[in-house]
Length: 137
Ligand code: AMP
Ligand code: ZN
Image 1 (cartoon, rainbow, N blue to C red):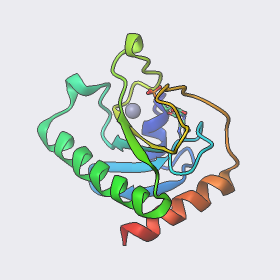
Image 2: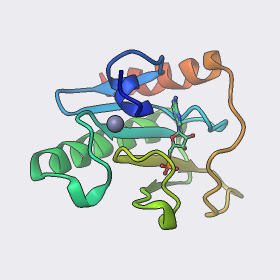
Image 3: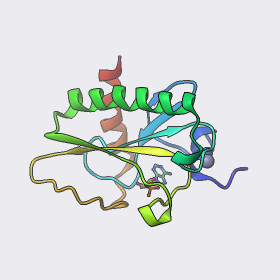
Image 4: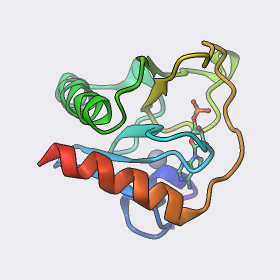
């Protein structure tokens, strides 16, 4: 069994609250985020960081990120949306499997990135994910 937590999520060995899936990408709710709509878009095959991302995977992540971003906007109408990724420990990466953070920003919500924060109950994540999935069609 892989030691990588996101590989185990992709393989279905660790539960996740899934938002979007295609051949190369899995998007799921960030378990450490309590506000509506915080989503991670991960490439399915194990890739440590942006330096190891091939063109097909890069394109797939970008396409999925844009689609999920539009769905988050439709579901939650945030004032803004941060798209964030950490590459390398010095940049704050803690899970060394390439992924993008989609972070809705609401009025009064600053730009400080404070991962991880409180663990929301799974039913809260599931409710948020259902709202996003409904907008993905
Ligand atoms: P980073 O620190 O940029 O590498 O992002 C890793 C993110 O993965 C953090 O925001 C964590 O909250 C999140 N995370 C870690 N484990 C899980 C999990 N099992 N399910 C969902 N999100 C997770
Ligand atoms: Zn992995």
